[in-house]
Length: 442
Ligand code: SAH
Ligand code: SF4
Ligand code: F3S
Image 1: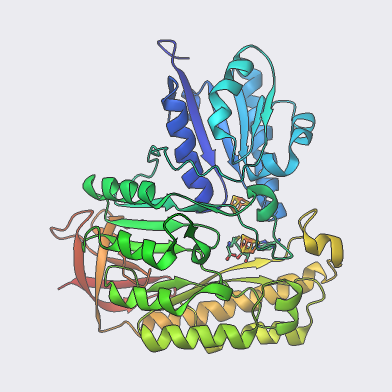
Image 2: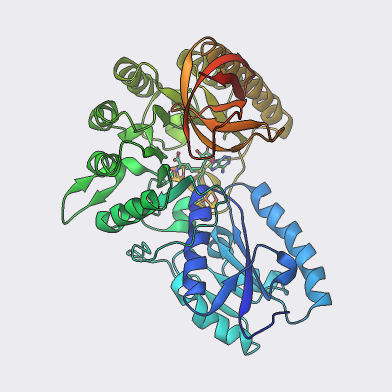
């Protein structure tokens, strides 16, 4: 396949930003060990699939992909296939039994072991390491950036989660929560800025509980230090858990104009009975109080959310509570899902997945339709105003149009004129859809 002894790795990533960030860490570990990364699957000696287990359909996608890769392997028996990430962790050696084409299985905390495991694989063995760690943060590893635009990047600031929301598989696939050394985070952020990056997103399952013990640094201090790197650097973060989004964090955002006016605050449900069963540790009243505090201090803040429809025992009345909280908050956008039972979670052990599939679908459709209206209403409010856009690339439809986002995280499209990727441009909004603002530079 290759003209020298270097082995080429192709990495395909599914799931959340954490997984994309992990693929960059894997790329770094492997390139330090004489492997190369290829963007073309046909050139690959090794294919890594970095997988997600959050819902059953995420796993089914990977299973289907493995059938296709099997066929590739029949044509090229030297091809090696690795499963990384959350499915590897959830299924462990069962996956080796079920998927005969797979050569190596590696969980999210064991990537440093990959070069050694690949030596065993090259020797014709099948290898596995799914040990979770209480300490691993890959803090010292400088990720190989796989993103294309070289403007926006993600920085992982912590790993794991121990909130144990009843429906969620993440605490089992990602292990205990742990924070990364702030010095390594700041060094990475500064380096990215020097390389020309203009937007960084600090990543964790629950960034509000970021804590670096020795220096007693919490998330607001970390955010502030990243924001101070340069006023031209935009800073975002995800995700915040409503139970611990603090006044201090919101006041920190207020003090730094380059921290984006956009908060992702997953509500999951508007019904207190559901929130309690979900083990979310807040109620509707608490959530709405947090929203009121945000809106009071950051009136132009864009608020987005995640919603699950059809969780165990959800009634029509519970569903209507979700619809009403959506209207009350007026979300800019939302990620909306049908509940999917995950083996071994609290909900799988304690409750029945008893909302019929047709009802789940019907409620999800209603939620999506409502969100569509809310997004359109929110976008229309921008017509006539001027927004600052960081240009990330060309619009999907035309090379004469640029695309970027405003501080509120909305996509804005406008004629290119003489502007370039990486520029900050003031755009006057003249039109919109539910997904996009449309305008012209002023
Ligand atoms: N740590 C983040 C979310 C991570 S998972 C947080 O707590 O906000 C992203 C979203 O997937 C969740 O917010 C939830 O809405 C959804 N999700 C998680 N488990 C799910 C399941 N079993 N079925 C359906 N949706 C689920
Ligand atoms: Fe899952 Fe809850 Fe942790 Fe988010 S906070 S990753 S939903 S357990
Ligand atoms: Fe999926 Fe794992 Fe992320 S389950 S959503 S890839 S943490």
